Image (tube, rainbow, N blue to C red; front, side, top):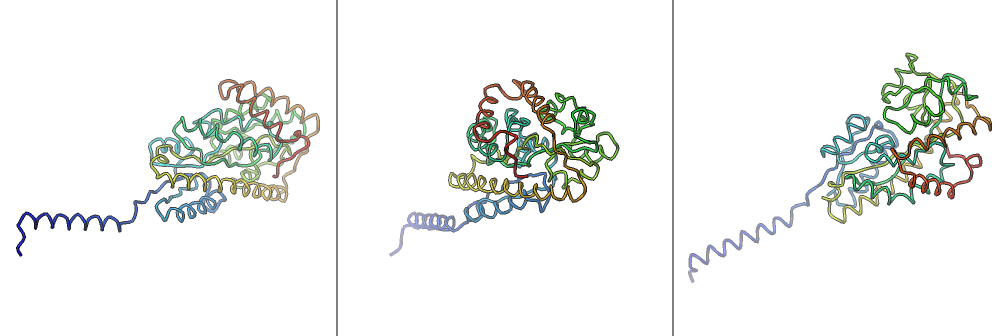
Length: 347
């Protein structure tokens, strides 16, 4: 039997349609690649943990979600990275407290000097305040994937640091844009010179500065310690860091991928905190082996520095963080940790 020409065309169209449907069903799902910037170099704990996280996310999403990691500051400093994130040239980044503060100044309350007595206190506050800060970052167009840290920060100098007048005679580096450190040091009566991190070695070599503040790991990694002789064995603050992502990038992912990414990122951020604390302990051993003298502060010196720290809090309110937020965080820190002279960080 011969079919009418119209029927032949109709059947042909059906065959084409079914063929397209079948072909589409066999195509792999589109892959989303997220570009991540970190200032830490290849081989660092940051990059190693990120690579582990990427492998787990890739496996859980059957390769539909992947990452490219730009390490070692190849994407520029943190201000550059944030501009690229806003332009969607970079979708995620690991940022220090200074970089986070460009987006959300009130996050710097977590770096208030001498507010936290040890690891337990800072861990508790970060956990309890996570949702609050995540909501604030979301309003700015970012997703907070997890908190990390640089470690406990100490004062280093070519000068003895045994007395307040000796500390006040230091020519102290301050990270350009780090208002928290600048206000604290200036309240202490210390002269500060703002420089980018990349310029600290030059400043130490030329005598522009003779002192700096940093976690032991940073002092070793950047080789700053070779120009100093003393470290005041009093943790000033914990250097906050975090892993952020563009909100629009996250919103463009399937719901199940969003859940996988957020849960996996929190898991590996916690791992990175543990590794950073281990590395800081090891770096402290390196510093001592290289002849850096740890200066144990007297009770009088500790009390003087604590007094200056309290005065510096008021200078941060309300321009950096509101009084209500500081009171909330300070209350949590007090409940979470023993008095500062009874509890020590794990560095």
